[in-house]
Each structure stands twice: as structure tokens, then as C-alpha cells.
Amino acid sequence: MELTVEQRAIAETAKDFAAEHLAPHAIEWDRSKHFPTDVLRKSGELGFGGVYVDARHGGSQLERPDALLLFEALATGCPAVAAYISIHNMVAWMLDTYGTDRQRAEYLPSLCDMSALGAYCLTEPGAGSDAAAISTRARRDGDSWVLDGVKQFISGAGAADIYIVFARTGEPGAKGISAFVVPKQAPGLSFGVNESKMGWNCHPTRQVILDGVRLPDAALLGHEGGGFSIAMHALDGGRLNIGACSIGGARAALTSAQQYIQERVAFGQPLADAQALRFRIAEAHTSLHAAQLLLWDAAMVLEAKRPEATSRCAMAKRLATDTGFEVADMALQLHGGYGYLAETGIEKIVRDLRVHRILEGSNEIMNVIIARDLLGANG
Image (cartoon, rainbow, N blue to C red):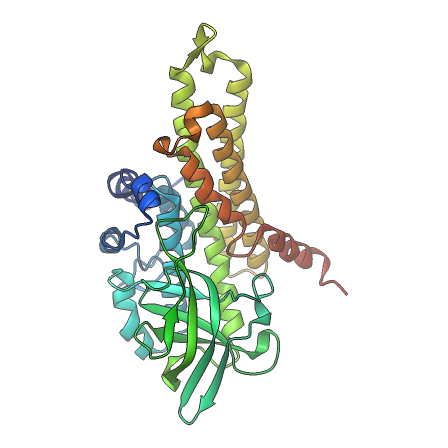
């Protein structure tokens, strides 16, 4: 694919930021479970906090393919930080796309410069892949809404300032779900313990607990009953970005593996002279490039708002996250025992990329979406 001058500048800016501000600290942040909010704010100064947001509200107003370049480049420094920035951008995009003028004016400037951080709150203890089955409720009380329920696996929870919460306001199923903007200071909002995780350790993952959280009617995002559609449209873009993060992390691991096998001598010759290893490098690059092209194709389809966008995004997410993890794991194998050591950073990439095959809709659910588009719904 031929990049424009502007697209090359986006990728180079993000890659330079990743090399200077993310890569040197990624291992320590992972070890200490440090959430680098100061670095996130620096990324906001470059426009990374409002990638899709209209320039009138402080955003960068990029198109979907442009964002793929940005997130892939960021992930070469730290896939986990890049992934959180993607989630934050889902929040900013929802507010810009579905918010009122008042909501945009109140929340978008601080989200775009990342002086305020966002969290996307859909998953619940009893509703993951079956997102339409959420039980968090929002009931009307005069001119207010009162929210009760628990959200699970929420990235940034406790540290974030603005929570987009999906709650049931009506009938069972997707049509009874609405979206709400919940500020961190809302009475009745609290958070669970920071989960101990395999990867993504540089940002917190907690429950978001809503116990009689009272919100004004103006906190409703979009129209009543429109929340599920908002959530799913946000996930289309999120799936592309998480795929790009997988490609970026895998490329970083593969670059390290290439350097290692060129320097490492065994049985009297560099490992890079062994045809079997040369083929593995060639196959890895081919697979990453194929996944990148499908991401790019899906991004253009999504940007054009074509009807097959959700299915195409599911295809791209599944392929990119599976491929990214497999390539990173192969890169660890090529490092031998050194790849298993924390100090190399390769095992961290493998741990970080593993969850990409689960979140934003598991890859099994991606196949459900694709098959439904091709064959119709079951039953």
C-alpha cells in the first residue's frame, strides 16, 4: 500500500514517540504495574487522545486507515499502552459521534488532550460475549436516572475520569440498552481491586460498581434504547485498532528475533544461515503483511460506512490478533532461553498480545459475526 506524505508523518511521529517515551520504560511499567498517566498526557499533546474527533472539539480528525498506522507504531514501544489509548479513543469517538453539543463541549477537550481519561464499560460478570444480556439497570426517577450494577474487566477503571456505561433501561435484549456518561466523582460509583493479570499490567483492570448512581437526564448518550448500537459501532473501530496493536507488537518482537539470529552463533555459523530459521522469518513477515492488508481493507470499508463493515472488521481483528500472537511467540522461540527472560521484553509482548484474541469480542465471536453475515443467523 502506498502511503501519503501525511500518513508517513503520522506513522513516524507515533514511532518516534514510542521509541522515546514507551519502549525504554515498558518492562519496568509491566513489573511495577505502573499506569503512566504522565506519558499518556504527552501523547495527548500530539493529538493521540482524539484521533477521530472533529478538529472543532480539539481532535485530530483522522480517518480509520490513518489510525491503524498510529496504533501499530505505538505498539512497537508497548502494546499495552497503545491498546489503552485505543480504548480511550473509543470513548472520545462515541461522545463526538453520539453526544449532544453540551456533552461534546464538556468532555471532548479534556479527552482529546488526555488530561482526562476514558473507560468503556460494557462487560459484566455474567455478560461477556453475550453483551445483549447485561443486567446493569438504569431506572428513571423524576428528571434523573439511577444506575445499579457491576461492570467487569474495565481497563483504566479507578484512574479514568469519564466512564461510558451501558445499562438496561427497557426490554430484555439489545433494544433495551442505553448508554450513559458517568463522571468519576459521581456519588455511588466505586471500583474493585486491581486484577492480577497475565499481561496488560501497565494499566489497571477493575470492576466498576454502580450503587444508586444518580445522573441527570443530560447524561444519556444518544437516544434511549440506542446504547447497544453505540457499543457495537464503537467496537468495529476498536477491533481494527487492537489488530493494529497486535501487528505492531509482533513486528517489534520479530525485529528483535532477526537481530538475535544474525548475531548468535551455533554449530560454527550464525543461526541466520540455517534455512529452516530463514524460512520462519520469511513466513512471519508474509503473515504480518497479509494481516496488515486485511486491516487496511476493513478500515476503508468502515470509513466508507459500507454494510459489510462489521463483518470485515471481525475478519481483520481475528486474523491480525491470531497472527500477531503467533509471530510474537515464534520470535520468543527463536531467542531460545533468552526470550523467556523478562529483561529482553519479548515475553512481555507475548503476554500482552495474548489478550487481544479475547477482548473487543473473542475471536470465536468474530467467527460468529462472519458466519452470520455469510449464512444468516442460526435458527
